[in-house]
Length: 233
Image (cartoon, rainbow, N blue to C red; front, side, top):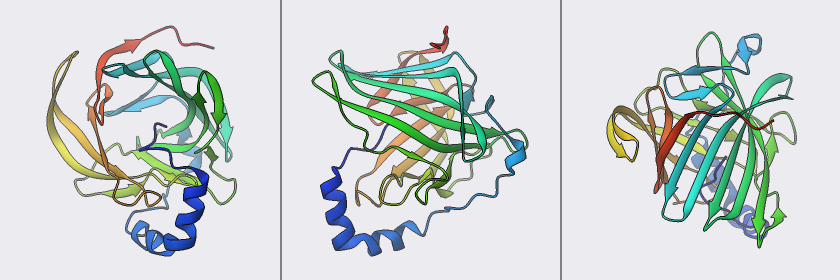
């Protein structure tokens, strides 16, 4: 999943040495355990703000930056759960910046979408430079987080990622009736989410999700196209 930014492993180690306990205490304000019934988790479905159906695609742009999010035909078993693979392909000036394969499952009972991890390829000069930020639920102390609740409550705070020292993105719902305008039209009753991480104290970004579509704004990136495509295998 597209990160707030990419801190090097050296800086993470320094943070652990100097202020990890304080960050962990701050993180404790956000829900980290989710009572999802595993027998209800499936790899296909949707709620009002997240479409997990093969072939669904979102394209967001800002200048020469472009983010393409595609729900693939592929699934992957993670932590005993069959998850759907969602590819995020980020480019700048036509050059690859990052490709990530994210693993999601949705509850057929509650409609909540859960995040089970990601495989990450970060590019530099056309070549893979690192896999920073990769994690899988059930490995190295990591466990799945909540990506998007089916019934968002104003003020709810929860972790999207729970991978100690690697990925700790968290969300706070700060709006449930927002209006937004993109190249694809005007949207109302949007969900506004404030994202942060204790790995980068003080860094905050906002995302907007439109009913029936999903992500329409990610920081400065805005939706330019959405709909069904022939998903890559």
